[in-house]
Length: 89
Image 1 (spheres, helix red, strand yellow):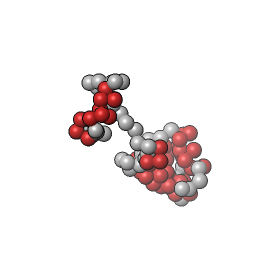
Image 2 (image 1 turned 90 degrees about the vertical axis):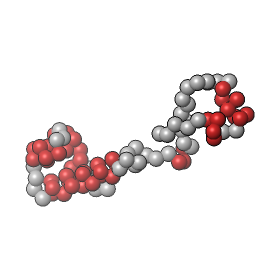
Image 3 (image 1 turned 60 degrees about the horizontal axis):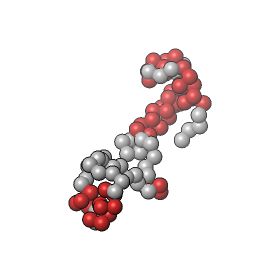
């Protein structure tokens, strides 16, 4: 998140109005509800996990045991089991 000086981007009257509530601190202004990105969309984490889970399910279908998958992906038994039994994306 990039820091920006309010006086450089907002009208003076709006800055004066905001200063009635808060001064000399950083203020986070969230995106509007329809413009927010979902978890992991910006940094690619969601895509990475989806691909990893597909690979786990594929290897399980090819005969890998849950214990082998646990060792390969450093996940617990229940985590592997949940991934295996969820539907493909």
